[in-house]
Length: 60
Image 1: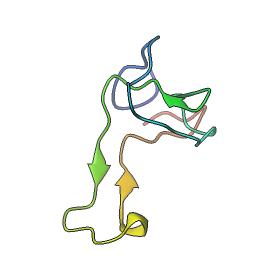
Image 2: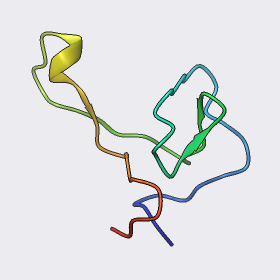
Image 3: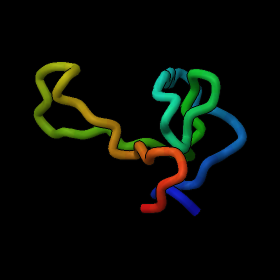
């Protein structure tokens, strides 16, 4: 199965995702069972990263 976590049928409440190239994406919602946001000590939006992201069709 692609990704680090399971892809589920329901989306994470309150999490909007517009990255339509992600394995977990579904109509502007995230369908990952859980998500991990990095980096520690980030001071701006640009310094953050969704560590759960997996490109469609890729195995990790």
